Length: 56
Image (cartoon, rainbow, N blue to C red; front, side, top):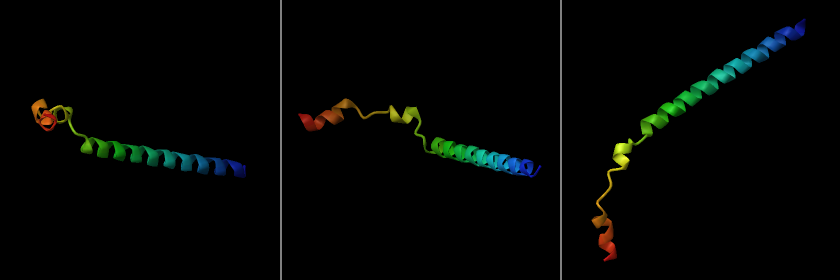
C-alpha cells in the first residue's frame, strides 16, 4: 500500500494550502477593515453653496 502514504501527503498539503488561504483572507479582511472609512465620515459633505460657487 505505498499509494496510501502519497494520498495522505497530498491531503496534508491541501490542508496546509487551505489554512494558508484562510490566513491570507483574514489578513486581507483585517487590512481592509483598518483602511475603511466610517460611513459617518463619508456622509459629512461640504455644503452645496460651496460647490455652486464656481458656477455662478
